[in-house]
Amino acid sequence: MAGKRTSPSMATKAAKALDDGRTGRVTKSLAASVLAQTGDNSKTSAKIASLASEVLSNPKSSEIAKSLAASALSQSE
Image: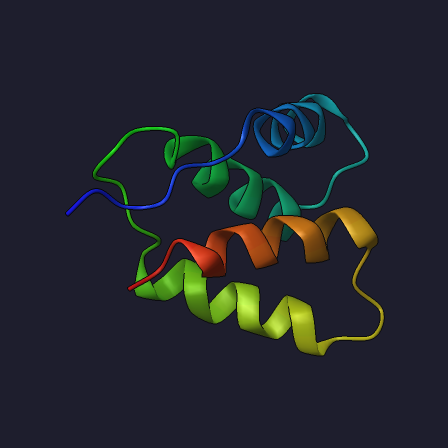
């Protein structure tokens, strides 16, 4: 069964987050994971899924971090 793929618009957001020098380590990790999910058989690792859950539960997380976290979680098993 093929997994979900990152949409082109989310891939663009992830790439911009990686290119932005102001982006924090956590957001860059999520962005890298989201970009890795452009293939058929990629799944979010347990470590990234846990990180994404933390981001989503933190009211101080940026909107881009939350968006990337949601994308990563949607591609986990």
